Length: 72
Image (cartoon, rainbow, N blue to C red; front, side):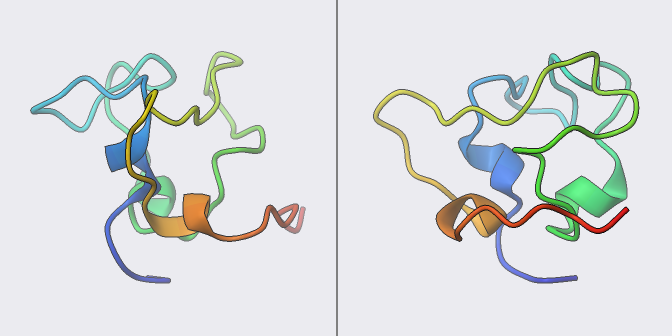
């Protein structure tokens, strides 16, 4: 785990009270929840939906760091 609160907690697509979102309606992958993958980049099965900050919201996890393209 890279650490901290998952970046998902600050995403406008998160379904509050769950670990589901518009990108992953059946459950957000652990690699994203554990901040091991920056979901500002494409992830397998994300249906083209990426992390987007909540308007006026706080950012968490990888969202507070510069974007770094994940290794293939």
